[in-house]
Amino acid sequence: MMVKKIKTALIIYYGLFLLILTIKSASAEIELKPERILITDEESLATLFDYQETNESDEQIITVNRNAKGENICYLHKLLHIDANSTFRFEGKDCKELRLYPGANIRIEGTAYFMNIKVTSADKLTNQPIQISRITYKRPRPHIYTYNFADYVHIENSEFSYLGSYSDVGSTWGVSFWHLKSGFIDNSKFHHNYFGIYTWETKDLVIQNSSFHDNLEYGMDFHDYSDNFTVRNNTVYNNGNHGIIFSKFCDNNKIVNNYIYDHTLKAFVKGITRSYGSHGIMLHENSNNNFISNNVFKNNHRAIFIDHSDNNFIEENIIISDRADGIYLSESVGNVLENNVVLETGEYGLYSYYSKDNEYSGNYFEKGSYFKDEFNGQEQSLASAKHYLPPGGLLLAMPEEVSANPVNPIIEGDSNVYSDADSNAGSNVGSSKAGILKDAGNSDKSLFTNILDYKQYHFLTDLVGYRIDFGKENKESEGNKKSSAENAEKNVQQDGFPETTEKTETTETTEPGRLTNFSDFIDYKRYHILAIVALAVIVFVTDLTYKKFKNK
Image 1: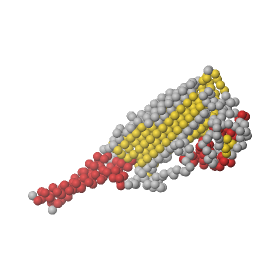
Image 2: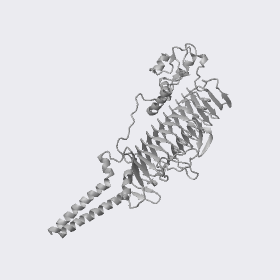
Image 3: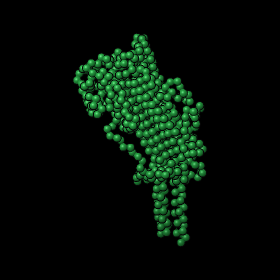
Image 4: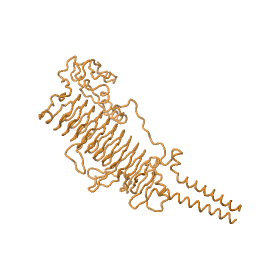
């Protein structure tokens, strides 16, 4: 009888010892420091919950509330540091929304994944997002940033809002990538941050199918030596400074198929409202060899501003209703402008200021071009010649020169013939750029058909909510205009034109905190499973040892 009691006691003792040891080994990968939570292996929000449950300290690390839908709303109380060679996963299955209290920043030195999650700030008194303005821009807010050459950041189907603020001694921009080796962002939202996103000396970043709007300063601010980026299929609007800027030695970046609009305020920079306006895209100070193509701009101060930057290629962009000039070159050399369409600008279609040796081909500047000291030291104001292009470009016909049987000034030869009824019906009239009207006697009507092919025409109509009537604007009703703009925001493809069928938005249907499959369960409970297996081994070995000694 005594032997059985000893046996039972040994099993219980060793089992409990091993269970405690296993839990401690799991939590050793999460260390609670005085100033931060340190992640030293592969962890997630779920394992952070486990750590808090087993941690002997009463200090709160993360707390969880459930909303009316039964979703986890999580609050981070302390700075979370993801160490080098470590990975942390922020996922919607654990927390539908992660709210960061002031000081509870996320610092990434290793790798981080943000999947199907919303990350925002939280006021400690109200638990609501912390809002700032051009007056209260110094109010402290948490932020997310990479540190010390982080490996990789992956963001997908996620949202980042109300992050970052300005400080005289160390600003927190919102979502910042410092010295990041590479990253990927897809189908995500960045809004009401100080900057939508900021980079410094970051390489090989892809940003696609995402929106950047209502940020206090820039939508996207890519700074010093941020190279080899691809920025495509994004919607960028209503930011307090430029929509997209590459500033200081940013090379070999591609900015394609984006819709950029409503940047009209005086630029707001570090607490100061500047005298100049905000632009759609800006290349600044030796940002060279970049590619800007197939973007649509509407209602910006200027659409494209190239400042002291050389050898950039700017093609097939559509610019409408800029407050000032459509494209502005300032002391920039060797840039190529090809097949751009600029309409209804407040000033010139193109303004070139002391810029040399740039090439122009196939562009259409409705309000002409102005060159200051680009050609033989002359200033040329060409506002009256609306369709003038400098040498090397194409000279378009003036309205009064269009006859009853005009020849297309861009492409001579065969042309498609269609009527206003055909254009309003949206029928396919072919891919030729000729497209002469049956009623070609109306001089105003031939201009757009000389410039825009079928895809460009319907791209403008569908994306901008604008009915092009061949030289006479006929805006749609506000309802249709809003609807077409919203649909276009969702449906812009990589080729730059709206899809014919709507994309279906994917929603997170899994209840947060519930594991979706067996492999996730194994990964999530690996340490508990290890403890159970080890306990079973202890029981087996103890029993075998007991029987061996008993037989003796």
